[in-house]
Length: 77
View (cartoon, rainbow, N blue to C red):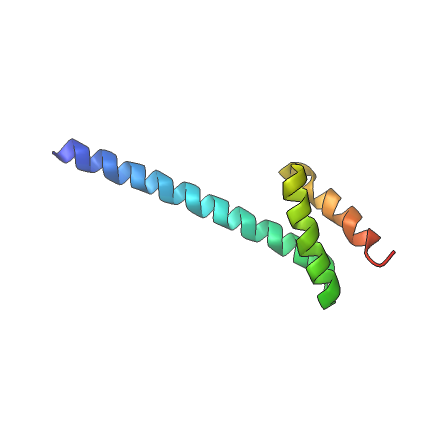
């Protein structure tokens, strides 16, 4: 019985760790997009939309910052 408890507790701990990792990564991506927008509310909404598009298009995390910077430069053109 003790082994079952240890296995369940370990599995729950790993699941919690994975969930927190994904949530924190999503927050970091959102903060990156908003930091590129500054205080302009219109640009903030545009950058959040760009972030959703990037995720939909499958932009890899390594390329996300450069992709968002290009989109931020296009704002208002």
